[in-house]
Figure (cartoon, rainbow, N blue to C red):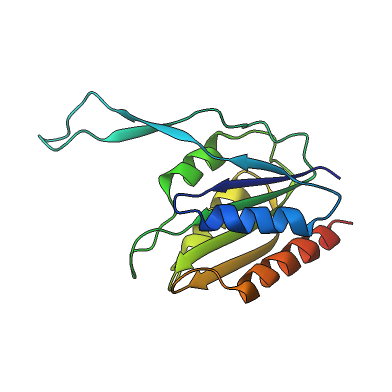
Length: 164
């Protein structure tokens, strides 16, 4: 079984979770795919406001057709109640190929309450006809705990078992 872990990490916590999930999958190592973007200024100004930025994926694998199971991970940004997914993960989910009909799992991490971020990412995946088989949200105050990293390992193992 070929497994990918696609993630966006600005502060490093999502990368830590992705590494933990990868290690939990044992000898069946997953391929880690970190989302990298380049912000490009749009030339138009909107009503005299500052230029908006357009995100362009760079050096990121977007063809996921060779994988049987794909984990998608991201942090949640903002403060309650205006929690949101980073634009980088949204752009990736819209531009990647080969996820139609694939088994997927979602993991998010955030400071405090995640708001509707899980529903948002699952909605995008469902629109792309991906099969969501598991999800997990990791909330923290100061950082991820050992217990949460153990929960990430369990999440990885239970997710893999669901498609065997």
